Length: 153
Image (cartoon, rainbow, N blue to C red; front, side):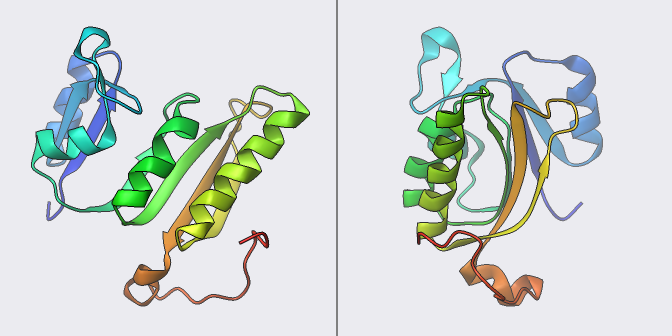
């Protein structure tokens, strides 16, 4: 109960709200986007931090159904997160694999290192989960740089 867990989904769910409360968490019905728009109930990650009174994030788990391409880099350019667990969506076209690679390279240029990935078993052709750690958190988690997966950095 030392940490606070925040969960957001476009549809508010009273069951998950109770689950979040039981683990010192909070759940809200919000859609994550690049900019806040009250008319569409969309909020940026930066505005979520302000809303919750949070000034740092240890672990960011993010699955925003394709919006990661517009949301993640602008946020990480302003805020350092120790670990990022991100699902990146692909619509199956070969050009979109380059889009995924380019997003990962942009994240790596911000000093994040890939330490794990797995294809989403429920969406094997459309989504992959990536786990990254920021260089500043290596010592805290006992991580050691062996090699860079993303060599365009």
